[in-house]
Image (cartoon, rainbow, N blue to C red; front, side, top):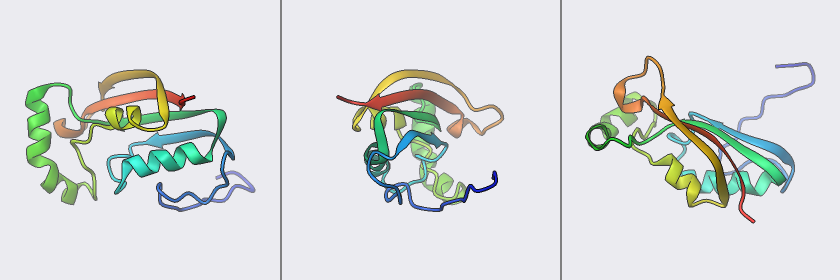
Length: 129
């Protein structure tokens, strides 16, 4: 980290920042592991300044039914192997149901990942008015 910048460890559902105090919130491959992704998004909306952005890159539930079924079947063993990762979470739907309004979402694939965590969504959102 740069000089004068300190690392802060905190749960995503309880950030140690004042209301409306940050310009951008970034989630990168984290919403699959937090215990309550809806609470994490609500907390992100609390600390975000008006006009601020949420940026995300997350592996997500597959849009292909066959792979989604495999994600459901393997979720419990994968959660153990993947240190708490829920491979079948529909993170885009969770963001849509949050205080955020999606601006853009691109679907892709996480290179070199096992198939159940390969589906990827990246995008941005702002606070809903």
